[in-house]
Length: 431
Figure 1: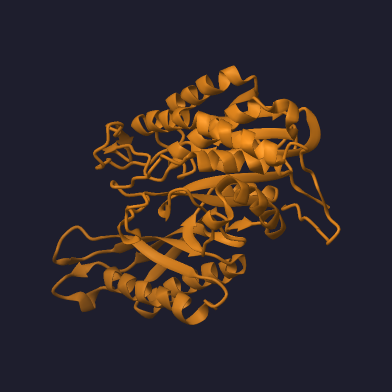
Figure 2 (figure 1 turned 135 degrees about the horizontal axis):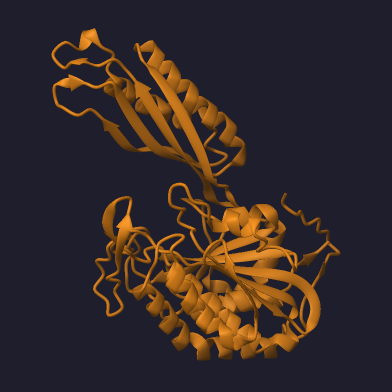
């Protein structure tokens, strides 16, 4: 269960004496010095991406960079995950910093010198592999923070856990992995983590800026599969059967009523999308079966039970009313990524020091989902975004995540590095 901070006006903070103007200058100088290496790390990882639960070479490269830093390294965790522990020289909390390391089955179309040309087998197909969501940058920024903090260990109040998480994009069918498996294998234990921070690149947020939102910030996700059972017939005599394709079409339309007519959207957004339909083998045969697959995205945890229940009721009810039957399977994946409100208010101090008050932006909901939510269900968490859009690029032209044209300007990855370091020295709210 989530640990809850109960802060009052007279609350105390674990902070370091070095969290001063002198310390700020020292951290800023160190981040500037490490930036070329962070960019180099990011570009190497970009050129040699690996898919979820297959990040063997990626992990080896991360371990190679961590080895000289004198950290206590736990490997493997959840297949190819890494937990590196840095014990500071002063008493304080245990703070975890997390980055994801896996890539996506996408063929890159961006013409850059470090373009990925890697391929692999995925679901029986030969596919390209690409860091099309910024995980290469997340990993590089966390490595940069580890390097700076390892050189300041005598001044660190408490302990830092650097968590390099595999399989954020989802595990292959029949496998376990990601944040949930890291938790199961003790990533947040020995020593027990008090709070966790995570960062994500944004191709739409201007470079040199940071975005954040208190409370619900990213959606929960669940997959659903509806199998519609009809009765096969000749396409010229459909009245002799029960057409599962027509039934499926009606189910798709009716599912949207859950969002538009049954969900209080003034509280939070909700999305139900059918992304795949499979039915039939020939143009003039009414098939026996149709299969629908889709995704559910919710920004309010309390919406989940009703949404899941109504999907099943509508699918089965529509099918029966048209002479067929339907079975429904819903598989939850990620929770709502929730930024602990009190931790967020405390973390803003560090973000302002990292990027400047004018470059810190309050953002709105995001309907993407994040594996980080599993960590933030166990301990208070805070998740923020780092800008990667080139300053001369219009916002409307920002390349979308999870696309073959995804691209980020990596010239200011020091922003994310500084944010991680300042968050450590900022300490945590104390009950």
